[in-house]
View 1 (cartoon, rainbow, N blue to C red):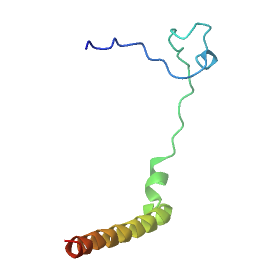
View 2: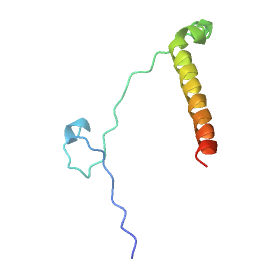
View 3: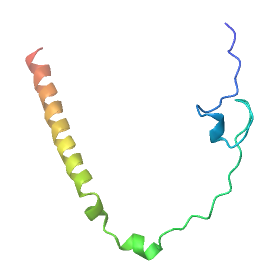
View 4: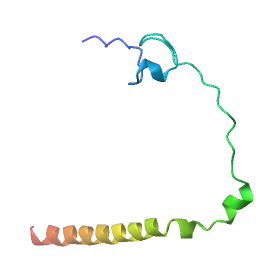
Length: 82
């Protein structure tokens, strides 16, 4: 079997999203964007990550407990079903 030829891949977007009149083979137009305004560094550092992610940490603990229980159950079943 021979290799399949590589095709020019275009995203699944309408041509109006490119900002050009061309067909599917036309390259997307580059858009001029305004500079991104970033938050001051001192404000970002002063936030406590534990305050922001306390729900995530709780979910990870629950997932870890469930994983340990399932692994222990599999170990017990491997000895029982032998």
